[in-house]
Amino acid sequence: MGVSSRLSAVLLWASVALTTTANNNPAIPGLYADPNIVVFNSTYYIYSTTDGFPGWGGKTFYVWSSQDLVDWQRTPEPVLTLNGSSGNVPWSDGNAWAPTIHHRDGIYYLYFSGDNPTYDRKTIGVATGPSPTGPFTAQPTAMILNNEALNASQAIDPAAFVDPATGKYYLFWGNGNPLYAELSDDMISLKSNTLSAVTGLTNFTEASFLVYRKPYYHYTFSHGDTGNADYYVGYATSSSVHGPWNYQGHVLDKRPSEGILATGSSSTVNVPGTDDWYMAYHHFKIPGGDGTDREICIDRATFDWHTGVMRPVTPTLQGVNAERVPSGRYHGWWA
Ligand SMILES: *[C@@H]1O[C@H](CO)[C@@H](O)[C@H](O)[C@H]1NC(C)=O
Ligand SMILES: *[C@@H]1O[C@H](CO)[C@@H](O)[C@H](O)[C@H]1NC(C)=O
Ligand SMILES: *[C@@H]1O[C@H](CO)[C@@H](O)[C@H](O)[C@H]1NC(C)=O
Ligand SMILES: *[C@@H]1O[C@H](CO)[C@@H](O)[C@H](O)[C@H]1NC(C)=O
Image (cartoon, rainbow, N blue to C red):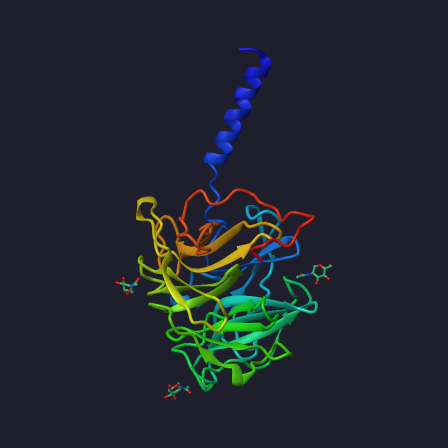
């Protein structure tokens, strides 16, 4: 073997080794859950629940950021702490769950659920900041109290969505009963006359999330108890943000052969300027996790070329390879 063929053999081996031994799940280290993955400009962000507390008793939100989906950095300090007068969210004493974010006119609006002792239940609030990582200032009172004209079993799991057809800003939320409403122009209140229930989501429990890829609105949600190994992600499509929703079956399920259990609470992101999509979700920590010891993973999401329907996502231990947001982006046909 000559030097150059030996070199290319080594390079081939190295590239095979790199692509087959990637060990990128969990995508972020430690115990976190309910990931909301999003991209602003060329940076990916994950907003999540901090896990590892009995009764889902975490009190803090951190933000993770990455240039390539593989190497993630966490904010050194929590961006919000739900801890009564010891924290910086006046209305909440804990159960900091499942944040999501909108960006509008240079302001970032972080929506989240928390325990609200005034009402003795979970409510949804909002904090605003000048960047995706804050600093965030919480509104003094919660925004969705679950005593509105329509209510859910719990007002939790907000999901931000901008309808590309109209540019309108929405919030979806709810456990047991999926609800949504358009946000007012101030982004910190709802247009109450737009509050509606979502129908057609077979086995909906929680964790609504929407993306748009032509020709459909894609709605994912979780079914079951997050502490149950069978927790899964269901999926529906529609031609409008207002439905009707066509149930499409499961899009993410446990994979016991790999030790992957309780896959749920997903969110999906498009790499701008490409037709590449990634799903972030949590599962029981491997090994030995449970419903309050969960970790966040990322796997590729793909769509059937002919039908435009998302294919079932395979949860892996390998995770994804690095992908940066390309510069010189163009507006693809799918957007
Ligand atoms: C992207 O960056 C520009 C320039 O810094 C900023 O004005 C804009 O608000 C950013 N957009 C998003 C979505 O963060
Ligand atoms: C919450 O506040 C209590 C004091 O009221 C403090 O002991 C505890 O460390 C705080 N927890 C967090 C996560 O900040
Ligand atoms: C939630 O709605 C039901 C009726 O659908 C109502 O009986 C109940 O009082 C409502 N809960 C609150 C807190 O408003
Ligand atoms: C609905 O959930 C139950 C378990 O809670 C499960 O047995 C059933 O298969 C689910 N239905 C669908 C359509 O996935």
